[in-house]
Length: 83
Ligand SMILES: [Zn+2]
Image 1 (cartoon, protein in one colour):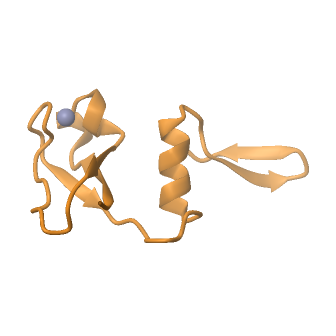
Image 2 (cartoon, rainbow, N blue to C red):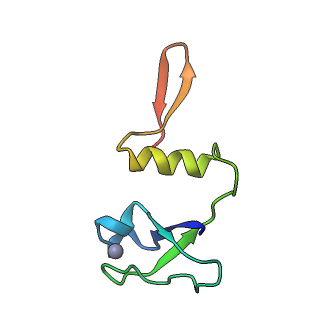
């Protein structure tokens, strides 16, 4: 079943779960979620590029999940923190 990522529309009305995005496994026939199952805040589905494991969104998301910041290399030995 496909894995979808949802994120709070409004960070001011979100809980720890939906603020940074969370994954939901849904059948393609299931209706998309519109509210966080934990706090009921409005959420939206993050568009994932299927099969593109190196998309910016995916990397950013995985980095956040892992507790790392995404770093962009800006020069020799220099990195810029993107998030
Ligand atoms: Zn929530």
